[in-house]
Image (cartoon, rainbow, N blue to C red):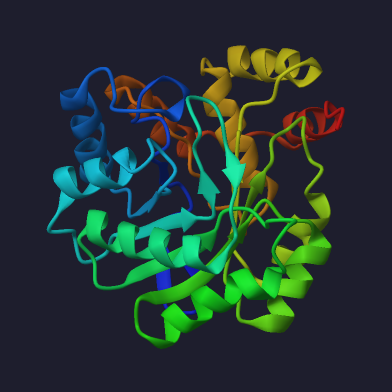
Length: 275
């Protein structure tokens, strides 16, 4: 279990709702019924943390979550994000302007059918907008009761420190896997101050994939399962959020929590990184 903001306790293996949309994270899923079944299957399996964003679809992921799960279980924490716009499939542009973030937050509240979002994350700092100016919108919304806690995503250690000087930041979501550990310093800051760290893109590519495949064979598991298990054992502050639009794949991902990697396997996976 892991605690977010001092008052939200969830399992360390959640669900990322990015992949329940169409190709390129654009438009509706090819099989809407299956996407809804995946969301309901996650809850039935005990998942109590779902991560999404207004840009997933855009809007589609949040709409599907509400359609599948509302009224929500009392223990379910839904985290969403704002701060990106979508020109087209596979395209992501940052937008940290206050007017955009205000509209993004209001849209998320409406689509998710919530009066307050438990964890609202600034999706990515905008180099054209001062970080404090973007975060100020979220602080105002928090004071108005529309946000419970504020998180931040895709940040450097310096940006995290800057954000925390301005307001209380309770979580970080950055790219991280066995190969790409450029955010090691950010993770270290999270470990020091007990902030949940949500790694996205959990599957390593390149040289680390060979090690993942070798360890997977030893455990009769998939490389995805080993990647998830490695993250869970890498740090107690990891809140892992693998995503899928397939029910069988969901069950495989959740089963990764039962895999126990040896010290040698952890060392081998850690030493495989190239970034």
